Amino acid sequence: MDKLEEIIVETREHMKKSIEAAEAELASVRTGKASSTLLDSIKVDYYGSMVPLRQIANIAIPDPKLITVQPWEKTTTADIVKAILASNLGLNPQSDGNFIRIPLPALTEERRHDLVKTVKHIIEEGRIAIRNVRRDSNEKLKKLEKSHEISEDEIHRYQKKIQDMTDSSIKEIDMVSEVKEKEIMEF
Image (cartoon, rainbow, N blue to C red; front, top):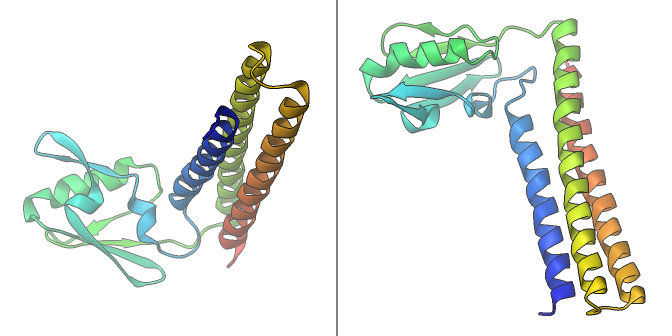
C-alpha cells in the first residue's frame, strides 16, 4: 500500500474511533428509561483498586424505571452504593445489604434540557476530534508534497477525499446526537 492510501485508511480509522468515543460517552448520559450503560462509568474501590462496577456485580433492568445491582460479594455492597452516590448521575441507590435497587426518578423538563446541553457538548467534542484528524491528515499530505513525493493535483484529490470523509463522519455523529436528544426529550 502506498503512503497516500495509508493516510486515507488511517484517517478513516481515526474518524471512526472519534465517533465511537462520542457514542460511548453518550451512553452514560441518562435518558428517561433505565439502561445498564448508565452505570458503565462507575468505578468501585475493590480491595484497594478502582474496578468497573460490571466486574464485581450483576446489573439488571427489571423494568424501565429500575436498575438492580447484585454484588457477587456481599462485602462490596456498601462500596458500590458509595460509588453510585459519588458518580454525580443523580441516582439514589437503596440497599438491603446484599441487593441494590436504583429507582430512576422521572426527568424534569429542566433536567432534560441540561442533558441535551451535555449531549451537544459531547457531540461538539466529537466534531472537533474529527476535524483534528482531517487537519493531521492534510498536514501529512503537505509533507509528502514538500518532499516532492506527490504532485499538486494528487494533494488536491486526496484532500477532497479527506474532506468527504470528514463531512460524512460529522453527518454520522450529528445523527447520533439527534437520536440521543430525541430519547431524552421523550416523556
